[in-house]
Length: 293
Image (cartoon, rainbow, N blue to C red; front, top):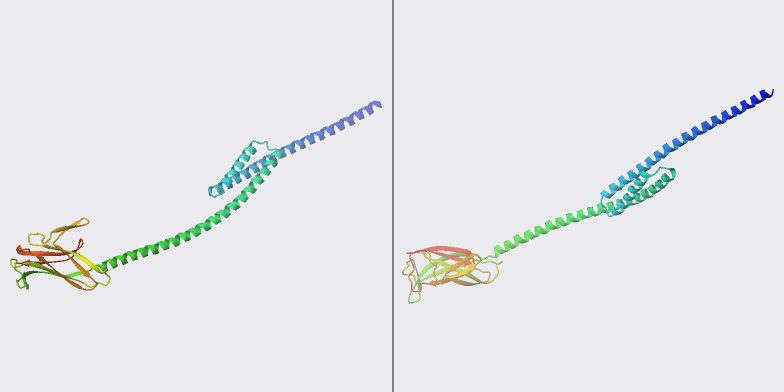
């Protein structure tokens, strides 16, 4: 009887131990499963945190490439993100570390959003300034075109006035003169009879021209290509002019006739064709020719 009770007690103890062992095994399995699940979740959280940081770095790179006045601040924030990514890569990925990195990410992301807003305002201001500058440039361009047109018109007007103000020398004529003892002058075509040459020309009326004394150079060349008269030479720039005599005309904007004489000084004039030229400084303003027999 006592043996039966002892066996029953032993069986009960074995059953209890079996139940405890089974419970321990179930608890250990559950703990192992929970640990694996926690580890898997932590790995995913770490990857997610790294992806968030990489995305933030990409945004910062894009903002920096726009090269605005806050680029230095953006570069400093990017360096913080890069350092945080390196630290996260080296970390064990425990819950405390991930919370710390998540907190730092939130701070950096908030700073980026503030800088991005400021950058957007700067871009809008720059765009407005660019539009204003374009308008100003266009207005300046139009003003320059108008000014250039006025300059051209003024130059054309100046040339027109200068051209209009030039005096016109006309009706140039030359005659050989025989002066008798009585003083009477007779026109002749004979070279041996001529005592002097009479050169006459007219200056037309010109209301635009400046009044005052006008100096003209008269050049008479005989049939042997000799310059008669004073044979003085005057330089006008690169041009050299040898002339027979000069005449000064008092011009008052009205038509005026001019006559001057060139004496032969006792020397017979040559037969042939003579050429007479009138110069206003270095500019030829009239010419003619005549012949003596």
